[in-house]
Figure (cartoon, rainbow, N blue to C red):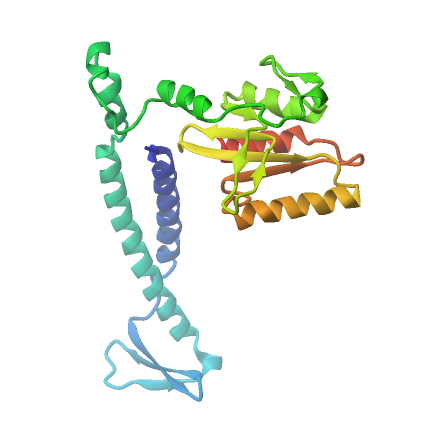
Length: 266
């Protein structure tokens, strides 16, 4: 189960920043007249009527002279949003004080070895999840083994220098991966994506394809066709499918690769 503490803390910071902004805006509204605005429509065009404090009737205000109307409507909006932001701050900060989702995982991890043998945990700890994922995700299932020339830091062979760089970067960042696993699509076709990777935090398998010759028109066309088949079978780019590219003019961008790892796999 994903621990959302960090995301909720970021949300709380954003709320607090908005509260600060609204307080500054409301401080500038001190001299706005007290009043009520009504809006009606004539042929779809808004018409404004204003009744100031102490007045008994609404009076029509031309749009060209609607500064007071604008100020009152803006102030009403700002006051409402400010109130809702304050309510959200109170609710979220209170929730964070009681939010300890990690206790669910610790309930199993704190058991002795004998008790663990008797328990089927609702959430599998990372140190048990990763070996199970490797057991299910077999590596090197593409049959063309004679093309494997580049040795990775983990001691396995891959087909290209770029794939070695990718594999070594996954390994450096502690991302579990397998090379060229057999993947059966919903339409019955079998593909061998370059890598299958595990986002441990989200308990999610993500596939990574590297397209290394995109300056070649025929290769690029086949690559687009492959991506299209992935997406038609539920593997969507930016969700459970990531791809990288390079050409003679634009070699593999390691900075971009590491950004994608941080965004999708950590």
